[in-house]
Image 1 (cartoon, helix red, strand yellow):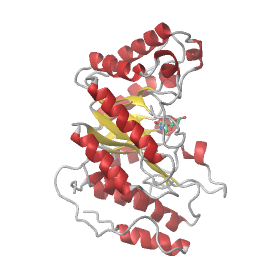
Image 2 (tube, helix red, strand yellow):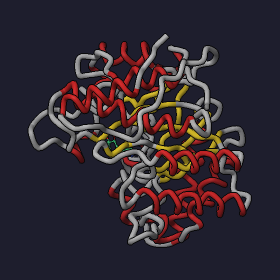
Image 3 (cartoon, rainbow, N blue to C red):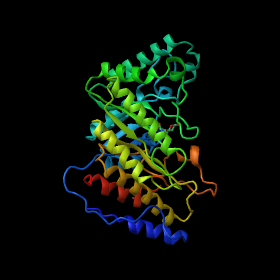
Image 4 (cartoon, rainbow, N blue to C red):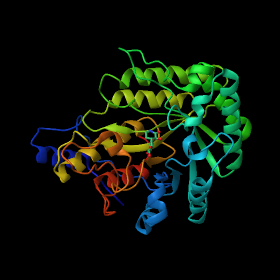
Length: 359
Ligand code: XIL
């Protein structure tokens, strides 16, 4: 049984960086509940998966669920308009099956990771045709194998003041806001048994953007449900901004509302952005773990998520330096295992919540 004390994490982090406290009010240690564990999942990096045996071992040691990092993006699947390349996604699927794991689908419709040829799409009819073809080919191929899909990824845009609009994309440009509804209906037609999710980030922190983004996401959820759209759950990515405190009340009431609407809640891409955290490793790891603790604790205050998944498994392979490289030249440390595959305090936090009941 793993135990983790947020107080200890915070004290250690604070001690090492010489501040009084990090995070919100300390909480007493809760005892993990025996019983069904929440599956832990991670995305799979293509190069590491192909070349690094230790990487594959880490996946089989820790994960009950995987998703190919970029293998189900349009850019990964559709190098040309008339060609689908399922090679990497299939390899991850076979690996999952061989090792008794499930695979989740990320993501059918997103504004980013679009192949160049999609710039030629020039009308609503063409956009709808391509979206329908894509969803039909991809969802049908993995019917019965991928049971949960991130149907629309990151629909909410950057807020202006306290209003967050939908994020610009070729889908919004040509199909208007109905693109979201269309995507869900198409996916449902192709696999009526699949669990269909909206997946979103930057909704959990105390800063200028999280609250309007969370409110916009909630409005979108209500709108879709009021129109009978087959939306079954919400993915909180959890790319946590390490410098900002977690908005515990905001997250808890959001999750409570989502749950009261009959939707499931998933933690889909957890990692902690550490570009502006202090350099000393023990302090940094403690703050990273404490932020994740606060985030998961707020979710669990309202509901037990269906999965806790991180965006990668080891600091050796992470997308983070693409966007959040540290200026001091040190490696980012956002994930549960360090670059030598040793479990970090973040892993203890995740392991603890995987066995914890909702409070
Ligand atoms: C990132 C991948 O990790 C990168 O390899 C890729 O180049 C860009 O996308 N939110 C998401 C993920 O939903 O798909 C993103 O993944 C990280 C942010």
